[in-house]
Image (cartoon, rainbow, N blue to C red):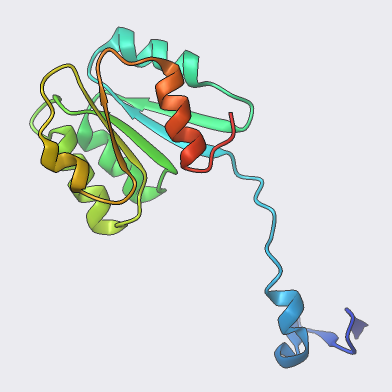
Length: 154
């Protein structure tokens, strides 16, 4: 039996902990500090741009994953969602807009950046509250601004 404050006792029983949740509630609601890095998924079919942006977006507190197709991006995102998805609009069979719709169907508050060197359909800007649009060519600083907005420190 241990006291964790406010006269709350915790007992260990067969490898499990029993807690008086009514008394421990203030402690159980304390936010836990995350040690997980900010995760950014960069989707681009141009090898050179994909590799360059991966280098420019690297940071100690960030994990940058790059893929060449929307299908690969969706599979990775479904398995372990990213904090921000940056995608080219013009990809293969599945476009960046298709990817965005799939991601947003699972999480309407997901952070996405849709990028294109072509005219961008204004309707894409209204896909979700955290969808941003960047015209190519864009700078790494433009992506960094969205990273900060999405909660990732630079």
